[in-house]
Image 1 (tube, rainbow, N blue to C red):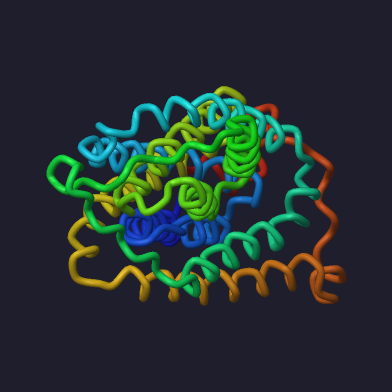
Image 2 (image 1 turned 135 degrees about the horizontal axis):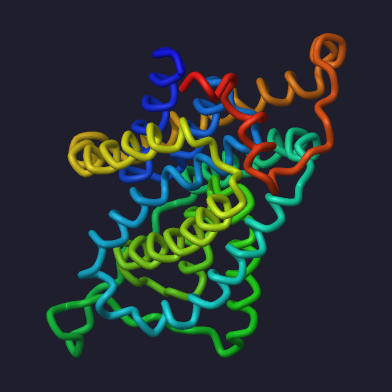
Length: 297
């Protein structure tokens, strides 16, 4: 692989690691970087999921103190997250390349609009500590009386996460906020990070087993994402997360327009032949759809 492509992959993954640590939405940077480096959209998505998983696990470990009080909530959401991640990754593996190519602009737009919604949503004031609460800790989660509804909603979010993933953290924060009351945002982030790690980890294992990831791009992006996530802890203390989120929103809108024009615009129809209706069930197919040529990496 030439240095330009390697730099695109590493740079995109490192920035994604920083953004995920500061605000969330880093996939909207690393995914287009992988495409710009020569990967087709479908294997780029699978490679991105595998590469960002270690950084996500590191973030989950960093939240272990906040998680000490919320094992009950994690127990409720663990199974739907696991099942949804499996179903979503399976759907990606059987999706024809041309279908995924057509869906990518819409998926990126959905993730961007979710981040925009989060930016426009008024901040929820913190609940005052109750005298009976030890050390002034935040209130407990008010788990719904109908757990099947929470199970279903988390399952659907996890299917999306296993299939594409961008914006999944925002979806889960919205769901957790709906029954979390005025629970501290750090506790919500802790639960979200653990569940996202589970969903991404399940999807990553499925993609690795199916040979859907690019063997050259994956280690480059993985190492850069870990470095970026560690740097993100430092950046988070100096840059307002809202500013980073607005940057990602602008990037997502531009990317949506670019991907949509490439796929559906008149120049694309005239100059680019329709890709074959292939899936990524076999590693050979995925490698051919990814970096070209992979043999020189």
